[in-house]
Length: 443
Length: 161
Ligand code: FES
Ligand code: FES
Image (cartoon, rainbow over all chains, first blue to last red; front, side):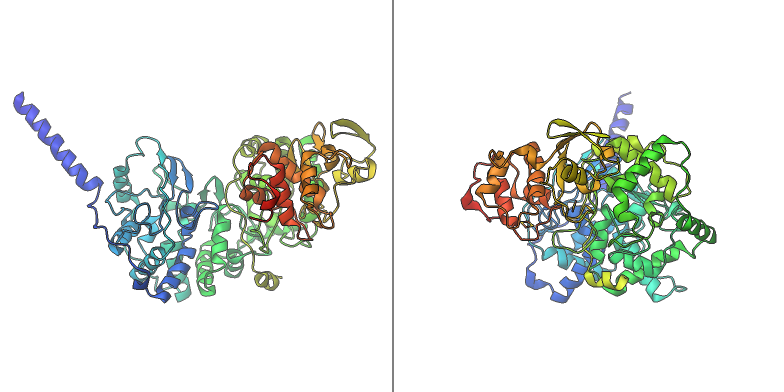
């Protein structure tokens, strides 16, 4: 008996000891915050471009908050998690992180103290960055204005609140093999692949996640979720009909494409950043993504032609659809039925991906809160109707839009969705300002 | 016949249900405060309050407004007896041509009703859909600040954004 106790005790001690070594990593030595002069200007500038393509600010800069000082709350299926302060403040930011610590965080998702970071931080992508790009990113963040700002506590449900468990996630989902270009593809495609997979982490939203929150590698780019918005598929599985090619994607990613429209919701920040990124990089991203969409599908082409040329469908005696039509005619048609005469409207709403979405949420969010352009910027402005239309009217409108502009089955209960979304905060950022030049050339 | 509740009174109007509220206000009810600027929801000159929320009356057919409480700038006071927010606009001389002002007052009214002491950032954020082509913005913001219950709201602070 006593011997049995001893064995149990030894096993427990061994497990705890083992646990501490593998659920955590060793802390790395703090350094004095590196001085501005220790970084090369060109490297800092390159880092700025990379940070824009990687969209670091969306999670690390709070709305109207100081740049990169963290505090953005992200809703995840496991609870609320906050973007951290990545300014070089020595106490609340990463001022005391050596390059080795930064690299370990980016490649392995482990902070300087040795704690696991949560994979809402997409280190599974950043693991594939080149050493040079990591150094440039380090130079960029370490030369930002240090801001003293304690990152708020995460509110994760048990057991997800135990950081060490991320170790198991890493076994499943962290692939830290360096990026390898595909020799059969063009240099431009490979550059795009690198930017998308290692830096821009498009899959983080556009690939569905498994139960454990990993990107489902069997369904790459099949569409996912971005802070409650539907992130549409980036491949042939998209339900939308208007085809994408590299040229249209480039226009969209930088500002606005006259066949598809522009980004809204969390994607707006992405395109606002890409608008400032080098042309060649944005084009490379577009070439790579376009290759996943593949050649335009003939069946879809025919369906789109039918939709674009068909007169208004017969609504039968469906009173809800008739009410929806009245809302559309009275509220929306002034801009949306002008054949793209009003700036930043498409020819026909059948060209918008969101009407083909599995739920009415994206469409309703735009109808509720509109589209804004930052003050002084040039870009789309659409008023929101949260205060002026009732959930019933919005639901009827969504039903009508779906029936009129798509050939897909109706959404289940748009009125309930409108009611639910109406009570939610407005959510992210205004749409990006469009460079007037880009707009002029797109016309 | 459409029935509308405007500034607390029920009004019968002989208008087709698809008529924009703005037209009915101006042409049938002689409430000429709200202005037509763009007709596309882009300028805010036509702003009124619907159940306490700001709305572009140029884009709202009267047929959709059954049972809703509509407030226009005339509902806040009259030239002889201006309401506190209108008085603040007068005190700050917050207008040049005045075309945008009824819309500005109404949008500001919906903000102050829900948040009596907004910060400058909140004011700017809330007012951003409304345009003023004359550039009276600083005075407009000063007027809203004056009408708010913020302690430091005063004329001396005008423009100190
Ligand atoms: S007239 Fe209504 S917003 Fe311009
Ligand atoms: S005062 Fe003239 S438009 Fe504002």
